[in-house]
Image 1 (cartoon, rainbow, N blue to C red):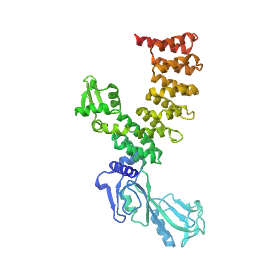
Image 2: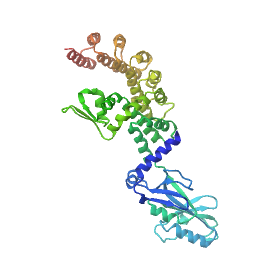
Image 3: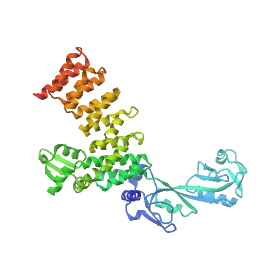
Image 4: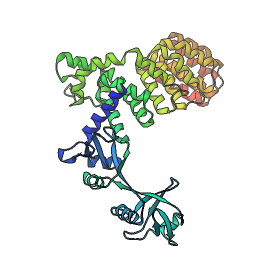
Length: 459
């Protein structure tokens, strides 16, 4: 599977960088085909070079970016030295000495034609001019120079052709991280079930945090897209890209509009799939929904919400969001652990609580238990989550504990949670709490506002 991902990267990279065939070159000596980097891509990621399309005999991989061609000239005589310096300074004003002890010393002169400041006898330094670039680099009489290394920066195929005329040759390549990120991001936007496994593999196997973050966000988006299957099946069954807006679930319709899949005109009562992604997703939604709702994705997301396993908070956040959409009861204990983790980022702890409230009634008792044993932070999150779930069990528990709470922050959260339930028993409990408060208290003012809202809603 990892090989498939590398292949997918290459295909997507080529889609971005390949222009016309005139920008390609076949190196007959290495039997390697290269492609000039598209100027837009170079500007976007501040990088230059030529992309390997087919590596041939070169020890490179498809999709690698050749940023430097390196020529090395052995030094065995004064003549070798002079020729090597002339070649190395032909394109720029710097090069590297490979010394006899293996050290590499970079030499740079101010202007073309300036002297390096040494003379050699064979490959041994016989003279060093005071104040010269060589003297400043601490080269001393008696040192030996094995070779001169010339690193030629490659921006175009023309640069490459000139550089490879010299030999022997090596390459320095640059990872196209920006293009890889674009490729991974594209996978998350395709809405294709086949992208799920590729993104999962990147999340689990890549060593690059930037790619793993993008993969996690891509999975988050695919999971969100999968929940719109019911909406898109209406278009699919009607074999149409336009339907009356009032025939569609309003929440799914709004979500699809936010995601850029759909345009809604309420005055005309029209909902139209956007080209090309909306119309394409009409064909893909069923397969994506089936793939996303397999147990394996929920298990994967549960694994990566743990701070001890996943150090990156953005990946943990994306995985908690995935669980909030999939709502697996098997994740409840792990979400409670995140919520209770005092070292965890506070926003992630609150998100864990929100996800527990999205899972619903099966999370009620674990949340109550967490509230009872937790510190102020845990009680705050748990009470808010319980209020979002609602129900008679939650109401009775919150009403029972309300008079016993002394911390004003927790009391306010519990009051708000009871108000969210909003039935007659909840309103009575809030009115009783109001009677217990001192006049003019901040919580009393908040309670007055809540009760006014609840009374208005009941009218």
